[in-house]
Amino acid sequence: MNIVIETERLILRTFTEDDGLLIYELNKDPDVTKYTGDPVRDIEHACQILEQVILPQYALYNHGRWAVHVKSGSEFIGWCGLKARPERNEIDLGYRFMKSAWGKGFATEAAFACLQYGFEKLNLPRIVGRAMPQNTPSLKVLEKCGMKYIGEEIVDDHPAVTYEAINPFIRS
Image (cartoon, rainbow, N blue to C red; front, top):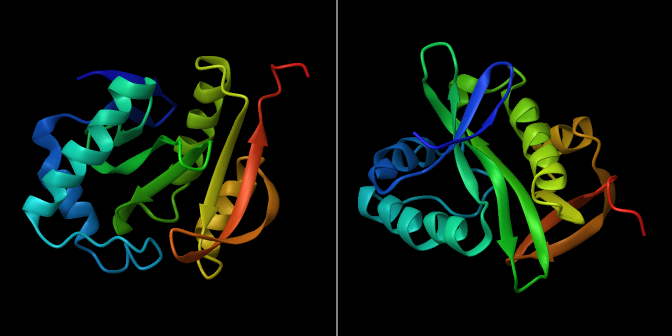
């Protein structure tokens, strides 16, 4: 297991080619993908997302979406991480968790740790986070992490509320 980040309660690790079932199990719940615009059709589709979207980020950018496990029992509860969006010239903070993990502070804990990692280890100058306007819990996570509201826009054909965090360790 390639652990990237460890928090008080969580382990964030790189996904592997063998994690297609985890992606499928997470995304097959319509409540989990209600505001993402990208439901997974079947296990083959989940494996395709893993191989074509998630894994290449590690090699190209040295970061990406990481599998999140609870330390006690090592249960997989979702993913969180930093995704390069070269077409938008930005790094996006994203997260998605199993319904059983909602309301326990895991998303905030993981997202905050990813922001810290991005600024302290990767020296990224800026990280954005987005959620659909109706996705109030996700917007609250961005706010709890200290990200600042910068506006609403259409991203990937969906309305999005955008937040940003600027690296405090880089002097302008």
